[in-house]
Length: 333
Image (cartoon, rainbow, N blue to C red; front, side, top):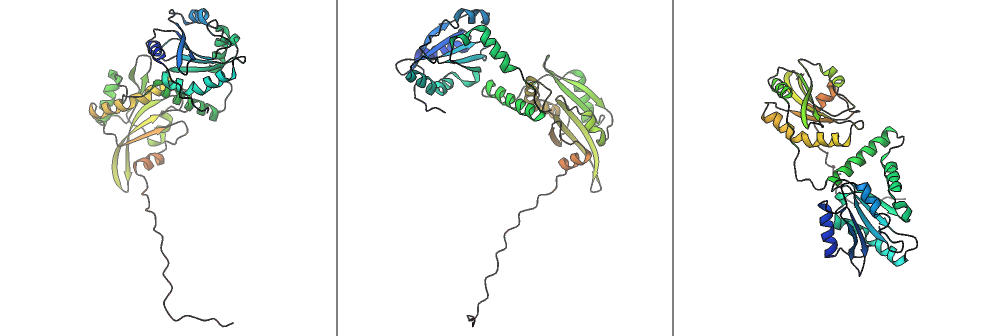
């Protein structure tokens, strides 16, 4: 990473960035002038970002003046950061801008930046060139299962960073009536299996299926491996000759096959929903499991979760006994 210069935003730029975060500006051009970051051009824009792009870019940039360009697409968290450094620009100014990039992003806020693009030619700042770049960036080529899982994990991390600091413990979606009744019956022991889903369109928790009885060997076939689900299972079994009743909560989250929004909503709703299930519907959850498409849900796996094997304490090192005291021995050769 380039060494940072310590050059920071001046008062005018801080004011412009605040206006941008309030969606009052569509474009902000930033340059380094007198050892400070300062706005060089601002554009309020209209409701159509494509018309605004055509009206400003690439005309607002100068080939001999390296600059940052912040352009807002739709919402206040969909900003494009363009670093424009033409090959004909002075070397000192190019190096100065590169060494100020990290500082500038921290001044504006990384969570607001959706895309970053480095441009060295004004021709690449046309709307057609940008849309081709954006399409190529968002489209995925052929990937193996491992590559797809890595990509999904990377997207989730980016989405979390994009969302900014989290001050809420979760999102409490309403539970529909059928799901409420099924949860109450589960708490009373009248049902053995209850499965629910998060309706991302209507923002509610809905009932998927219920079963009066379900053998442990059939549980895995009832939990889908291509979409997230909340599942409650009353597991009646015997352990060391003693009958036991346990209620398992299984949060199934597949590695691929679901959207990032869906995965984030399931994760955000889980805490408040479990609190409501225990406090409002009388469910006593003894164990919780989080599984993906590859995890085992056999009876043996359930027993290992409920009755984990005791962990042996590490054995201390046995210090050898010191040599016995006695007369010194002389070995004759």
